[in-house]
Image (cartoon, rainbow, N blue to C red; front, side, top):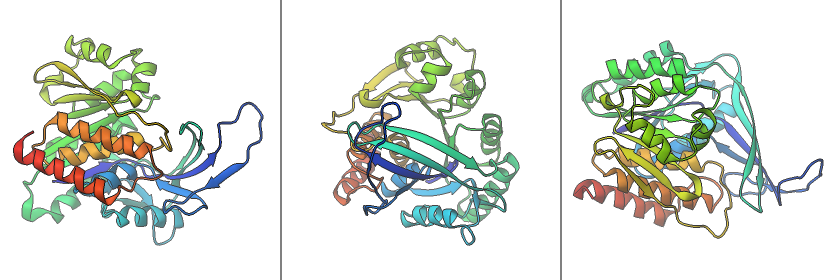
Length: 338
């Protein structure tokens, strides 16, 4: 099953310091590290993290968003090359003639693994019209297998437009599955919940729940869903709500049985880098979903393991032994339904 991720791609420039600065303190940067481990600049591709992980775990991934021309812009060339190196198809990205690729400067604390992010964005948002054009291009490309299942994952930004995209995908893609990530706090829950109601699987950020829904726990949120507190008709599409909860692991609610489940995360003695852990969790989840018949419990258990492992290392590349192990467990889970 193809996995098409709809969301921005940004270059992360990570500056590692011994500990986070206090007040007007001046710190020496220990080093800046590239994605291949050299002590220079650590560049990483943001939304690509989910796709890079998903692709490494055996799924066919495509990126659909706006981009500057990789033949003319070095930042775009870097992003396209980084994604392509992990087998992510960038042919659905729509080239913009103006603007620049998003850029994040990250201060990463060596002491705690935590980070502070300053983000800059200067490129047009993906429009619903462009999305529809690229989806039509995709369906033409796969015309010989037009009824094959396709997985769309939406980053929940520019929400009114994303809602229209989700409706378009439902209406035009014959065998579509949809997941969405609700994270950006600038959008109210009154709008975000309309996106959630159109998805099969909904990833809810704990920070979003705390800041925008005034809810302090996943259980409290799930109770509100089951009590129809917000008036949405969840049962038309939604199969599960998924709430990653940092070091606690993940909580999830399967709508079919109404039961709240919890999968704990393994404890780490030391966090090396937390940047990208959430996208890693989502990418591993998408790899499981795209198998088509793996239980949600197994998918999320493996996603927790992959995200925890990511926090113990720099970058998103999975070691060969772990990659083989997780792929085998997902494949066997699909065969046996375990």
